[in-house]
Length: 192
Image (cartoon, rainbow, N blue to C red; front, side, top):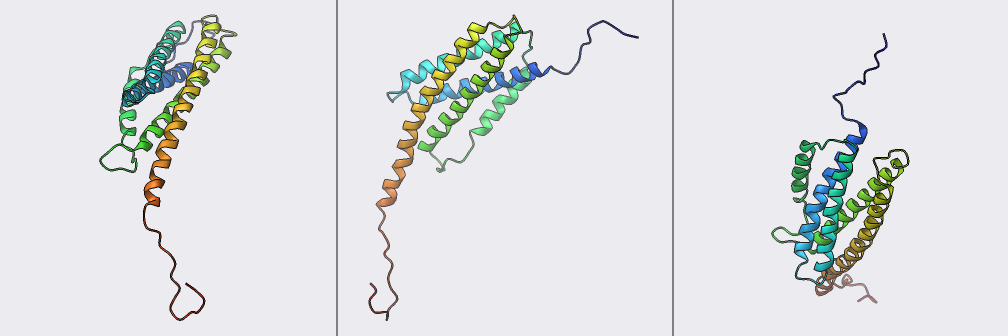
């Protein structure tokens, strides 16, 4: 017999999984960008990074609002697991045992850049859904997408500067070492 009652499933919809994955990533991104900004406080790039951190936190709130508008529940356990994963990710080798490496700045900025690119992909996916789902505001998604593009450009500029600084600092120390010259075996005339 046909039952016309809507069926509820204990399994989350793919949209729920997708948006919660992005929410988990955005939480890690917000924490990372604030750590990056704090480390760059003594440098000239701090005001730009502080503004960027504020925008990224606002973007996370926009995602929460969109999830609310779409009746997508927030999965708290995913957020907790994301925090644990992020803290474990900090334990990566950086070429130094007891101190922070300049390479850490480069890798963190690259991770942040990847996160912003992922966020932009989410905005694009939601923008495509806005054509058929009136709960989504297309103009708001266009604004969020434009802001993500600007954030990517800012992060890439800073990443490039940090990479040049970090990756050119060590070769100077290496070139200060004495150069070994090849010595010809004794008894072979014409070689030095």
